[in-house]
Image (cartoon, rainbow, N blue to C red; front, top):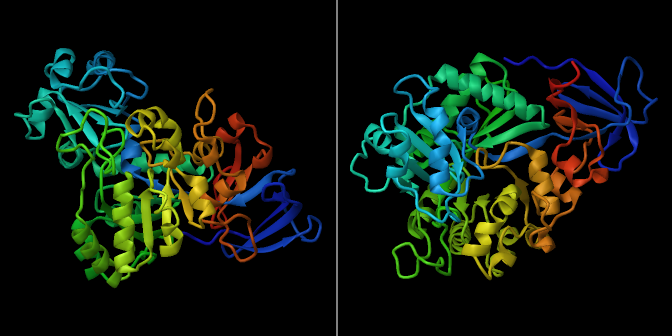
Length: 491
């Protein structure tokens, strides 16, 4: 059980971006006073004009995958299938015999060649190889890897969507105690970047996994653990509702939403769209892949909502987002659309009208700009349309989709504010959002720290309003408080 933090006074700290110097008093895990710096008696921590903000959330994480990914071969930025295969060569001999060589982060949508098991066999003929795409919707295996997961007869070794997910579940996993250690380390690193909470969409028995972790040691972040359809009946049987605190977790673990899928992803060209993908016209997946029919989506959402479990519906293509919003309209329940990457003009105002939160990942906009320009040509003005959604009154919550992008809220913020991740001009700058709006979307709508708020706070060395793009992206974090307990910084 996590003990309440001792009372704490912070003085000479700026209250939010561009805010005045104040003193904050924290007691019973909450902010109990905000006054002038000299108005509170007793010992205080002088923060020398630094800025205090509400604690930041990453509203879309795959925590175990992110933790494991930090130990895998990084394939990001490699420009062809052959280049990826060659990049594996120095790693093959470094692992114990029989251990799977796992890589993460390839993006094949712009490659001049096609991933094939023969390329991997030439480099690693005996060791199983499993490479996971940056968007988590494709896996590329060599012959030994295919045999390991019972897919020995697969012609190419490249598996997408359901086949990919089945393969990932079949791969050997690290022991639970080892994986839990990796997750704890990743959460400590997130706290060092100002993160105080995550929504974890890892595909597993999330509630059981996080309950086990919380029993071993106090969690470094608040966690809302998603439920998948295969465990919906069990969650209902336990009487779980979205937002419920699980016992024995110090109040830090809550039941999250029900995760559902309408489509695939852009890089895999399986996002469900109104227009065909160039080069795929006339094929079975010319318009992407419909993962769940409207009827089944409505059925699952209705069952979950009737028992107090809110749905979070993955939708990337414009047709998929229409499908998701139509389902929310039919069920009339609270919930979220995850990603909301490509929208029709008619659907933009429906988020606010239906009270549906858009859980979006701004780093995807800058990482996928070239892929979008090719495969969504002529439509990118309505891709990653954050300014349009805000103008229409939608509630935005920012996340990373780690390991698709780093679990770092400042990288996310900078992408939303500047719409570029390199030295190129902003991509569709009309969809940029202000620093204040980006901070609110990163803190569940909390723009400023107020009396009565939970003492989930981040203290930064530079006022975000004064930060240039590089500083905003790599914001120096002085300290992070979770319920008044330091998870990073001063102790």
